Length: 206
Image 1 (tube, rainbow, N blue to C red):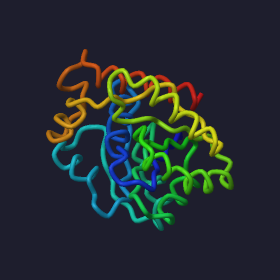
Image 2: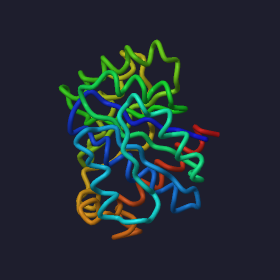
Image 3: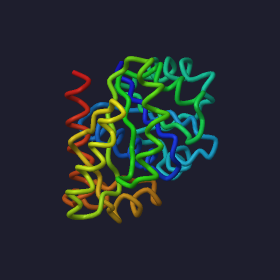
């Protein structure tokens, strides 16, 4: 069963937003998904509480029990697993990367955020897993920033996903209700970006 890890050493990079919207986009096309929240702050789990018993479901798990939690999700019929990880937690990231078929690394296109990619790049060099940086909270018209961020990632041996997430109010407004952007405005830019990301990820997973 396809498993996607969302990892970053930087707090505020958008890991949870990416995980929620990717899992929900999969569910909206008939692939029931489960988000596994390994972050002690349990932000994704709180979203799951607000959402109720609707896919994507959210399970919490310490990193040491991640493999067992994934097995449980498989037995319960999940088609896709998305792992949300905490920042500054190498053990959690390593376990998530080890379990994943695809690794996504959200990053704002700013110098401090891009610098934080270095540690993740070192982990991935050993793991030999397909991995892509997903630029998040990209300002409108920031073509130069995207190009510079792509160059910075390439210097670390990382590829950049062609789909970016803009700085969209719908991402934040929806999460506060246990929803995703497509559920408050299906034709909005945030919803379309999440849909495009899922379509691209689905191709990577084959």
